[in-house]
Length: 196
Image (cartoon, rainbow, N blue to C red):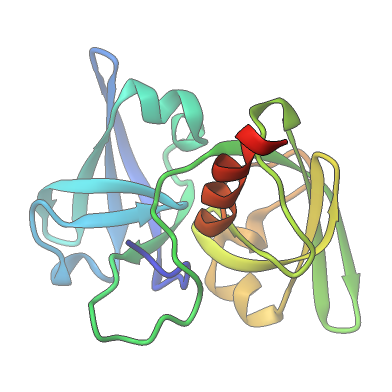
């Protein structure tokens, strides 16, 4: 379980295929605080630490993860958002994030306005996911509020701090991102499907 508040950035150092799996070596300032078997969200994808070597650690993504997220698009030098799982008894500053990506989206517009940057994303509506105005959305692991919800598209407003401390600063039109829709909204949609 995560909060969507990014702790650190990680740089991809190596990518090694083994069958349908991908071993990802990440360099990060939080590596010294990690342990084997720990869950860490990488761009919102929960992956398990399998190896630690000085300031680098390795996680493994399986085919299911590679097919449904942007993890398979990573290259050496790519920057990922990192968050360790939350501790019980801590504040929940973002929202409840599971680290289970629902689908990807593509950045379709970036616009600066009075100190904020608005990012618009388009996603495939055939998968049945929805956003609502002022509802929560997780983009590459970052907990955000939807400011403009339309069919198969939504926008978020990002403050300069978030641009600087996440990989949003590297986004451009066409960037593929991971989306995790609000867990409460997903359960409500599932419960009401039979009544609609």
